[in-house]
Amino acid sequence: AGSLPDELSGGQKQRVAIARCLSMEPEIILFDEPTSALDPTMISEVLAVIRRLAKEGMTMAIVTHEMGFARDVSNRVFYMDEGIIYESGPPEQVFAAPKREKTISFINRLRNFIYEIKSASYDLYAMNGQIEQFCEKHFLSQKMVQNTLLAVEEALNLYFSVPNAGPLKLTLSYSEKSEEMHIILEDQNEAGNFLEKVRADDNLGMTILQAIVHDIAYSRSAAGNKLSMLLNENMRRE
Image (tube, rainbow, N blue to C red; front, side, top):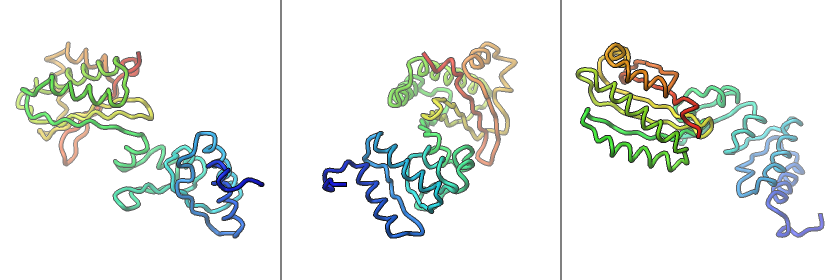
């Protein structure tokens, strides 16, 4: 209490600011990134104060990137993107089952790699080099890198074994939250799961692919065919 303002830590300054607001008996308090530029200890102290206010029934609007905190104390969440309220709802919906693409990407901390493949004569080595750069950027294990490359190569070999297979888009979607790697292939060919067409002809290729991935799922939309698969956990960890 006897300290000068510039002698207070960042967390102490935040708590003083909160006390100053409370002295005016407000109906609502706006917190704009209340934990920014604070060390972990100070963050926990400030969040503890805000949690106590929430339990006491204080109405608060909080702008934050602390998703765990937002999930714990809020009764309604607004995700802002594209300059608008992109998605909103109760925390159990927005955090556990977000509906829109950018919300899903933000909540799961998705990092995406997209590669357009025009024909079966694509440059495998150039693609693999870009995949390796993507994986290194996000500090993925060498085992995960190698098995991602293997799964992609086997999936593409199977895809282009189908007659008249056209161009496709390859997407690798890595979740920093769950440490999972999704492999997604999208094309505008006639409706149908290409894996169903090759299973009888290439048992070895399917055996290799199924040993690396699981949750293989096919869907069809106005945009075309989409096949997604998830790299097995034992293929991700050293």
